[in-house]
Length: 126
Image (cartoon, rainbow, N blue to C red):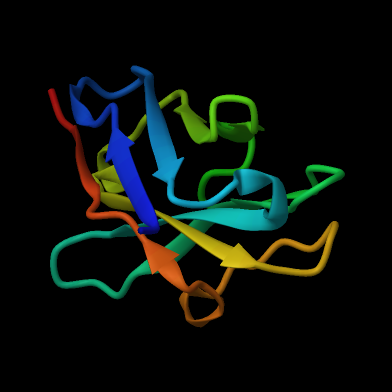
């Protein structure tokens, strides 16, 4: 059974950092492109970051570029999102997603993804 489980969310002050993890089971991340999305109250879900298979090409939304870093550890079947210099506008539920894709390609639209985690809340507030 394919499953994605996010962890690492929480409450952090502006300027702080969090690292989100997405643990996959039921399939090997070796063959899957991965993405992180977020949804704030009253807003549509948006693509935050994505990473390809094989050569680890990456994508970042302009709003997080330079602050967030996506990485993957295929041996642990886990994808990470390191979030630094957090801002109140980063507050949202963060979801990870997986899809079989073309080697070296990343995907930043939610319609490209087949599997989703349940989400983890990130709140940035003083």
